Length: 262
Image (cartoon, rainbow, N blue to C red; front, side, top):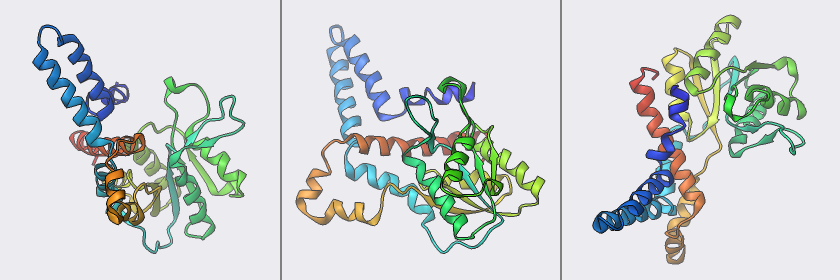
């Protein structure tokens, strides 16, 4: 039930869903309460314009991503890669595809090839209503073996459906195998919440973020020229998507804290 309710959040908290709800209210009230209708339309515009410009989106994303900036990573006992990075090989896809967050899988492979750890733990299940198929862990494993990572170095954890379950299920594997220290690989925007959850489970996790949406270059672009500053005020779907991703993480931090998960 918690998982299902979490999927309804976009309708009431995220900019696009909330703007749609507000516009529906505007349509319902347009004849009997025109002032209410106008207020709702203005609110929807503020939501969409305010969250779809580059200035708001990039600085909001930066507030999460830059909490754990990359540094020289030490060696560890295992690399843990969190799911959410793949699309299963459903027709007409010829094989497993990578999502935007697919950098997680590639970065995990790079760390292994750099001999940062002798094994890779892949954590991620599959939500039933997203269709039958292999787990995210299995999908990631197939990609890794296809680029030369030995199967004996890969450990699959195929049951987790959220970040809390990632941490709980990975901890069981660590205890079974006597693994003490891990490199935690996930998207930079997801790292603050993930790291808190893994620390709550008393896992010695070193952040290894990847998939950065905002770099120094993107921030410098905002103020590089007056034209760039103005152009970045124009609504863009990528900006509203990135803003929503960051908002999702902040809401997740609140909900997970209320549940005692971090």
